[in-house]
Image 1 (cartoon, rainbow, N blue to C red):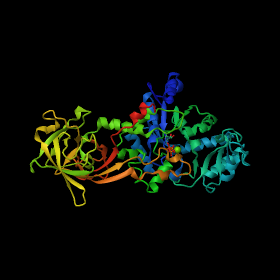
Image 2 (cartoon, rainbow, N blue to C red):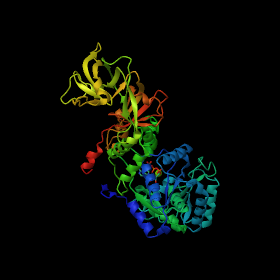
Image 3 (tube, rainbow, N blue to C red):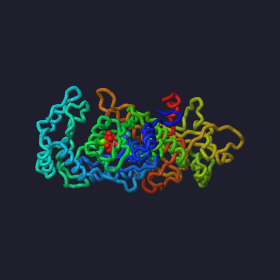
Image 4 (cartoon, rainbow, N blue to C red):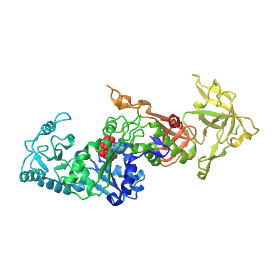
Amino acid sequence: MTTDDGPSNFLRELIAADVAAGKHGGRVVTRFPPEPNGYLHIGHAKSICLNFGLAREFGGTCNLRFDDTNPAREEQEYVDAIEADVRWLGFDWGERKYFASGYFDQLYRWAVQLIGKGLAYVDDQTTEQIREGRGNFYRKGTDSPNRDRSVDENLELFERMRAGEFPDGARVLRAKIDMSHANLNMRDPPMYRIKRAHHHRTGDDWCIYPMYDYAHGLSDALEGVTHSICTLEFEDHRLLYDWFIEALELEHRPQQVEFAKLNFSYIVLSKRKLLELVKGGYVNGWDDPRMPTIRGLRRRGVTPEAIRAVAERTGASKRDGRVDITLLEHEIREHLNATSPRAMAVLDPLKLVIENFDEHAVEWFEAPNNPEDPAAGGRKVPFSREIYIERDDFREVAPKKWYRFAPGQEVRLRYACFVRCNEVIKDAAGNVVELRCTWDPASRGGDSPDGRKVRGTSHWVSARHAIAAEVRLYDRLFSEPDPEGIDGRDWKEFLDPRSIRVVAGAMLEPSLADVPVGARFQFERVGYFCADDDSRPGHPVFNRTIGLKDSWAKIEAKGG
Ligand code: ATP
Ligand code: MG
C-alpha cells in the first residue's frame, strides 16, 4: 500500500494528467455528495479528504452537495451534523453548498426533454413486473408493453404523475435505452417514481422524485464538476451516468472516477449497520466513542489531523479491502503524542503513606507539560504525606526484574522523589489497602542524590489534592477483525462487551478539575484521554482515546 514515494493514489495522478492536458480548461471541481440519512463515518471522511484535498491541491474547488432525492429517510438533523463534521475535519465549501433537491425543477424539465426525444417513457407495470422484465445477467430483458407509447401520451402521463393523479408506485418514468444491454443498469432504468412523502426542503411540492442515477450525474453537470469521485459500487453505473449527459447534449461533461471504499479491521461502516447499533441500543448513540462515526471518534478524543493522516496514508486504489486498524491507532497516537499535555492520573488507586513526611507539609514539584514540546512549558504538582499510586504498580511478591513497588524496594515517583516501601497493610480479608513508605528528601525532583540506581518509576497523585473522576476505558467495538465475514454468524455476535469499562474512582492531579469538554491529555504511563461531554466543573469524566502501546510499527516492519 505504501512505498518510498508515499502511498499510491491513482486519483491524484489522473487529475494531474487532466490538468496537464488542459482538460476542462485545466479546472478541477469536485464535490462531496452525502445523502443526509445518517451521520458521517470514517469512510466518508476518506471521501471528504479526497474531494476537498485534491481540489485544494490543484487550485480547484469542492462543493458540498446533499444528495437528498429520497425524502422518506432524510432529515435536517443529519444535514446540520454533516456540515459540522466536514468543518471539524478542516474543510470549507465556502458558498458552494448545494442540494440535489434544489435541482428538482431543472431535472423535471430535462425529463420532459428526454420524453420529447423519444428517450423516456411512462411505464404502468408494477415494480415486480418491471424487475422481472429487466431480466438478469443470464437472461435478456423483455420490452414493457408501454415501451412504444407516443411522445404525446408520455408527456401527458408524466405531467399527470407530477400533478398527483396516480397513487404511489402506480407508474414510473423510465429511460428508453436497451432492454438487452449487457449492463443491467442500461435496461430502461427508472428515472422517476411516485411517492407522497414530505421532503425536508421541498415539503409537499412534489409527489414524484428522481432516482439517484438520474439525478446524480446531472447535478454534477449543473455544478460544473470535472471529476465526480465515487466508490467502486458505482462503476457499473458509469455508462448510465454518461448516457443521461449525452442524451441531453449537455455541454459540460463531468467524468466519474471510482475508487475502493476505505474500511478497517474490527469495525463495520455501513450506515445501515451503524443505525442498527444505535437503534438496538448496542451503543449509546451515534457519538458513542466506540462508533467509527466522526462524532464518535471526536468524542473519543481522536484529532482531525489523525484522520487526515490516515486518509493520506491509505491513498486511493481500485481494490476493496480492510486496512489494519492498527494503522488508524498509530496515527491517532502520533498526533496525540506530539500535541497532548501530560498529566498524572491513577485509575486504580492504592494508598501510600510516607511516614517521614510532615502531615501538614506540601511540596510542589515541577513537571513538564509535554516532553515532546518544550514550548508547552510546565506546571507544579502538589505532593503530600498520603498519595495514590496505581495498584498494578505493586506486587507483594516481586517477580524477577520487577522494579516497581514491592516490600523493601525503592522506586521513583515521577518528578517527585524516591520512596521505599517498608510495610504492607491489609484489611481483614487480606486485601492490600495501604503501603507504608519513607522518602529520601535528598532525592527531591526525582534525581538520584548519590548515583544510586532506582530503575522503577511510577506515576502518583497527592491524596489530599486528588480529584475523583469517572474514567471510561474504551477499546475496539468488535472482537473479530472481519465481523461481517464469518459464515453463518451475525456480525453483532462479535460485539465485544469489553469495549467499554467504567472506572468510577480514578484519582486525578488537581490541574484537571475544570478542564473543558474535549480537552486531550496523555495520562503518564496510562494512555491518551479526552474530557467527555458529561464532565461538570469539579467532576471531570474522561474517555480513554487509546492506550500507549503501538503495534503498527511491528506490523509495518514485517512489510504489512
Ligand atoms: P454507506 O455505504 O456507509 O452506508 P453511503 O455510500 O450510502 O455510505 P453516502 O452518503 O451516499 O453514504 O456517501 C457520501 C459519499 O461518501 C459518497 O461519494 C460515497 O461514495 C462516499 N463513501 C461512503 N462510504 C465510503 C467509504 N467507506 N470509503 C470512501 N468513501 C465512502
Ligand atoms: Mg449512498
